[in-house]
Amino acid sequence: MTLFIKKMSHNHSHNHLSISGKNLLISIVLNVLITVAQLIGGILSGSLALISDAVHNFSDVISLIISYGANLLSNSKKQTKQYTFGYKRAEIIAAFINAASLIAIAIFLAIEAVKRFNTPHDIEAGIVIWLALLGILANGFSVLLLKNDANHNLNMKTAYLHLLTDMLTSVAVFLGGIIMKYYQIYWIDALLTLIISFYLIYMSWEILVTSTKILMLFAPNHIVIDEVADEVLKVDEIKNIHHVHIWQLNENDCHLEAHIEFYKDINLSDFDVICEKIEQVLLDKFQINHCNFQPEFKRDDEKELIKQD
Image (cartoon, rainbow, N blue to C red; front, side):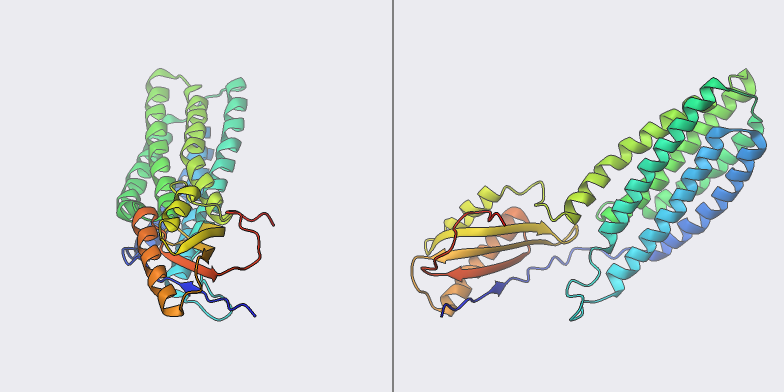
């Protein structure tokens, strides 16, 4: 009987900074207030751009609630025998939902803007100006609250981008209100809505793609599996590496599992030493911080680098 010994590395990164749920909560409250005010103001003024800003703010409320819940899950829920990874992917799922929802809303607003081009009408610009200014101030404050966390967390980055794009939306609506008030150019309302929609799609696409790749267990973009294999094969005792899987659990944890074939029937203590050497190299060169190796010696199995199931 062949003995299969597995070795798991635990080179956990301790640089993952804690995320402030309090800042998210403040942002949620501010966006609820903005949404209600701008929706009412948009209806009273007849401004599609202001209603668009209100809808965008409502999407912010939903996305921030999702981000807040995901943040609580990922930081407070630990691994169990049933959930062996805990809730580490909660924030990735939140990032995916947020990005997808933002793209869907942007497409809807673009369609409405095109319709408005064909049927322009007078707009009460004074209401637009003051409520857009409210949006600029409130979202600007929220952006400052989340800026630091957005630099190292994909979930926080989506929340941050929601708020940043909404602040920029409010700036555009504010300028549009000025133009409508003093020059009576009302089609600018539809044009601003269309520009905002394309901008939202542009800002959300990369996050949607990144979160999808993580959820699909794709290897990170910075890792070339052939290069990883070459590094492992530099160890004299190793004859072959095959059945390789590399994936990201979340933004901070990159996993590798593989079978490694040895030239000789080595001792378990020797295997431990070799594993530690490989793990350090993979951590330093590829940021792979979890390794699971299955050693083999004269085992009759397929030796392809990537096994086709």
